[in-house]
Image 1 (spheres, rainbow, N blue to C red):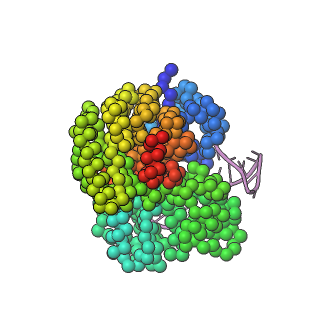
Image 2: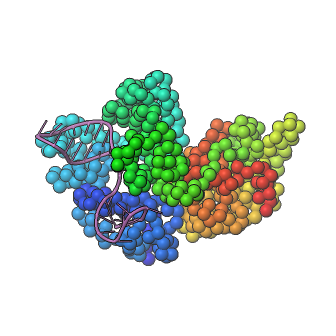
Image 3: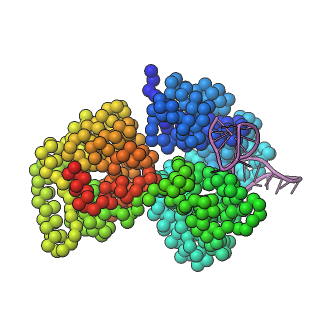
Length: 580
DNA sequence: GCCGTTTTCGGCCCGACTGTTTTCAGTCG
């Protein structure tokens, strides 16, 4: 039998179904149902085959009987007759047209049925050859922007990493405030505020009593390369670095409504508005409109907005319609971990291996973050690892760590460097250092760096062996994925989490901008299964310690509380945990 | 196709912006 389809592959099938049905002009609510199902599946940390075996498919919000049957057919046969019938009606190239900005399903459908266009290249040729002139809906301006949009689709960048987007948003907001005194307050919203690992565009919110002036200032900033659209209260621009940025200028009295609206997610907002309607309230970025015509409700803060439908404020990182409304209604929202809760970084490198700074410099950087302790975890000597340490060099390093700790103690500084290592997990689950070397260390991070494309069973068994080694305290970047370039190992996350919970092994959220590994859905699942976490920078330079912010956002998206995260614990608690 | 503190049938979030319009459809977020 062929390999079972992954959740991602099945999610893609339902997205294609939705796209195809939209192009065919079929019922919008049916297409929305397929899209919702696809999104729900994409975020599931548990394989669909497992849920199906437990009869739990229809327990997933957005999956009903009909889609559950289609999932079963895909799992059993690797195919779906319904999907094949749809695909036969619309060439794949027509769906490709949807990648062109401002070409939606209606336009793509007409381009296909009326002009026989079945590819972006074909569309470009038609536009350049004047074949669109005189076609209903295609005036000269539309054709001109279409050619520009085709060029954008051909060179389109992938999504931007969270870390880069945060930096871009900060500088953009600073520039806007400096250029326009009419801005009373400005912040970013959208997926950036929700802490998603990659960002499609920047959503900037500005409070002002003079929206026209702010929009004008926004669209004429030096950072702006091109204005896509510009209206009374909204504008969309492209920056020189290729990022798209949207602005909404809003009355201060409606700040909470606009912030809620532009933070999303779309699924969260749709659900929010359904709940509002059930209370006789229509909600938009301009606030509430009581259907009965009653008095307006306050919307200056997001707390006002959620209070209007009887709920406490919900943290942006939770707003994915993945159970946050139910938790809020039941008074069971988690008290999410915060950056200020972090007392230590437990995965840091120095120039003893491939880091760029001395142990002391890294320790001082940790102290500057306000930490009370840190773990120095240089690489073990292993194939492919630069300048990794063997047992002898680790003994030498221990002396330097002891001397530094002694310096801190005699200076009356309460700070402790734990001496550790980031030991390689070999392809079969062994470790690159012998047990007696590991036993002499304060803390051990074990991480996979090579052979990350093993079959799932082998990849899982490899990590399970490492977790069960009594010297291993932390499993570092468990899947090895790199966002946008390497998918990482396929592992049986439930098995890993259960073993980690059994042995007390901490599972890492590696906060490197390209790693964020574990990812947020995995974090939520491993916490459900009783495992504990660490959030570590994996810093190779003092500046990298700031990456921890990304890890905290990821932890929050995974519903993590401070008590779940070992580097929020006091040093004594951590040492007790490791000893046990 | 999904779903239920109005509902197992009949709904399904909401509005800005653009271009081509004699009043609105399509796209986007």
